[in-house]
Length: 191
Image (cartoon, rainbow, N blue to C red; front, side, top):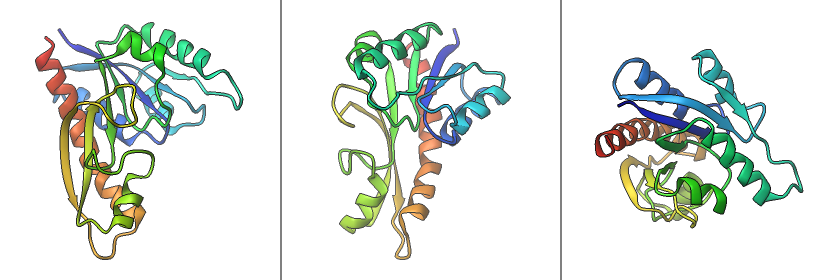
């Protein structure tokens, strides 16, 4: 049976596009059931609609009740009955309601070799620390910040002339490959 995936994303959607392309090209036995973003103007929504995938914006208004937003997000995602939820550049922490419903079935990509450099600025923090190797991680989301069980990692050399943008762009290439591989592995481990 094909693995049904809901993708959570906040930005342009290059990670999501890698999964959409892999599904379209039959490189992974999955179906992107929906894309949900916390930003109404996110490019990922345009990418999803262009591929014929339901695209839902669920922004968190400034000062809004975070727990209520999380419960609504849980309901939205649950409506697509996913086998797996892939957080691919989703810039919000998933709350108690979401993890209670989908815990153990949510994976996330992160632009560092966890456990090094958790949080929102992995490439920047790697450069500031002067490391020679950075990279990407796919892990199972838990209640911590980038603390879940690591599934896959890929390394990227830090070049002498790198800045945050150039390093992050090379890391994103690895993240895209790892996301597709993680979904494929998930399907094989959960037939």
